[in-house]
Length: 313
Image 1 (cartoon, one colour):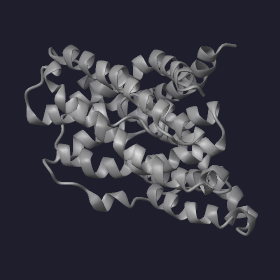
Image 2 (cartoon, helix red, strand yellow):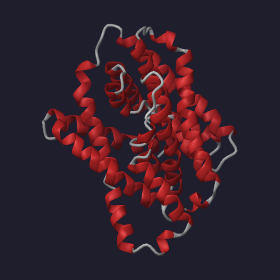
Image 3 (cartoon, one colour):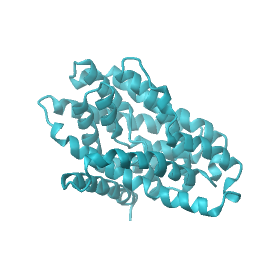
Image 4 (cartoon, helix red, strand yellow):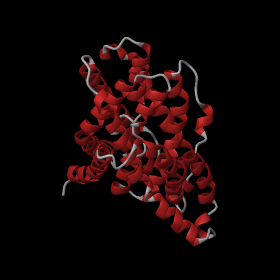
């Protein structure tokens, strides 16, 4: 089996589970009323358990460089994408402020968790997964600061940074340095591992259900120009910039893998939620998520395969 097939087989389950979420919504097996409670369980319990079990006993995260640099890269890559998009908004044909702001958001904010984590689990080792979660700490900070400022005309959401997944990272890192796996009761570790294994499937199902809710908003007369420009930037130009960073940045093997992985990611599904609740344009976010995700079925394996070769991993 060649490298492209290996990556493709790692990608397909993610898309299959997303489709399952869409189907569950259409069949009314997963109702909108249940979304909020399932989302709270995923964010407040399952995801922190996954982070805890991935960081604890992670030798790569006992290297200070793998603790300090990844969040900076996470924050920086999101900010870079938004700066690039800000300079190229003309190609979208959009004119309204909220549509332009959403366009910028969707180019900068990539799917840093629910696609990249299962791919990292399939392609790499647990050390890389741990570094990925620390990297995502920086993305979370960017999400609730620069991303929200773009949508909210300068107003950020600093308090939202300290959410359960972020707190799980901040708690797990010192425990890892203190070799917590050696003195924390084993049943606690096993419980966290079992709960954590539910986080990604549940999160992806909820993403599919959310996409199913908004499919009717996808079409519009001006939509195709927006779609083409978003795809050109998010899954065309930005991966190249990420890979140049991975190749020339003096950092660990694990962080280089994380950058290569994130380079291939489509627009974050959470962009739809951000646009809907913080003054953005939901149809623009929806087009970005669906178009880059569908195209990602082809581009994700190609970019990861090319990226690993280009960076020399």
